[in-house]
Length: 367
Image (cartoon, rainbow, N blue to C red):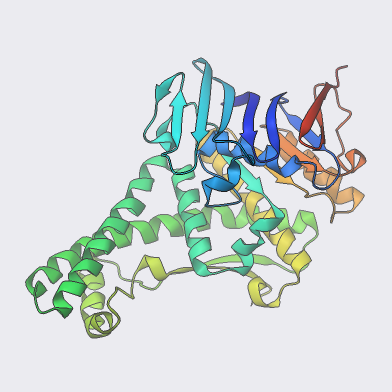
């Protein structure tokens, strides 16, 4: 199990500088709205993944009037302590180092903490386009089975090659190579589809149980809906051939896992369409919690869990249940405007961080 111990920030969002310790089990970040609680959570996520959980534009991470942002995280792993550093500068390649050595593929670093995050802004995962849910599902697959991430990358490369070839065929050349790329795409398409289906099957039970315990009425169901049910490479390639005329007309491949959908249903109805915002919020939280349990079973330890402003819409019983559910194993970081909303904040060993206008005051409650 990898434990995050200390986080340092420099010129990240509203922070000029900050250094905080993290509790081995529970860390609570409290303060008024707009003080920078979510910024601190984002910096922790950045240190674990080398990307933001709020934006695709790295420029937004850099504090106004600063030239670059930097986060550093000290972790304890089975082989000892390690130091992770992420540097972000507008217009430059993101710099990732582990113990001082530059890392090209951060996801494969053994001492990188797994992380799961709930943010109110992530409701787009429920309400937004299918591409968001596909990307999330692919990240889950990689978290569950790290080696399987190669299937997604291989499929993307093959899809790009086939789309480029379609453009050549439309221009009157390259048709003889199309069948070869159909089979190549089919090979990785079946792998990707089956990985996604396995992942959904694995989390369905934990997500449903989490939804019930959080008080979401009705039965929450996850349903993976692939475009193809082909069982062999030949069958999938035949499906591509049957759709060739429409692909040539549009100029891109319209059939395959890149068009699949993950549905979240309550009592058989799509939450995206028929759920209230409160119900969607509970469903998102249940999804994150269920995935965390599945990851813990597969990887031997639960991911670091980041929960932003999750307590405001839960009653006292649900708040207590949530903390008991997530904090019995693994690390949890919770933000709140009211410290009294987090049961267990007074427990010995809990780290409490008060955020005020971009500064952090730390208090460790010890028995």
